[in-house]
Amino acid sequence: MNMSKTITIRLSDQDYKLFKGYAEADNRPMANLIETAAKRHLQECEMVTVKEMGGIRSDAKLVSRLKAGSKAAHKKHGRFVA
Image (cartoon, rainbow, N blue to C red; front, side):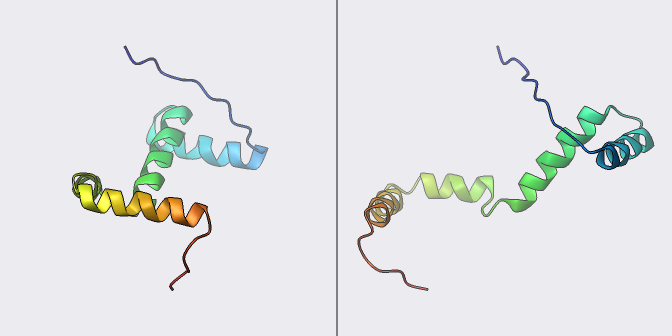
């Protein structure tokens, strides 16, 4: 069973009033507003979609090459190509 997790965030008075105003305008709890906004932001920042990532993970040859490249980069082998 998945249990919800609780986090604590520290907001300035100005930011608290800002979040509270948006939450009240939407008639919902501030925690829900913050959670929804954070999720939306993360989705917008994703470099690949869930479908694209599924395609990458299903390609064993590509995954192998990515792992090898990651190991080489970690060891500082090879050269950077821009």
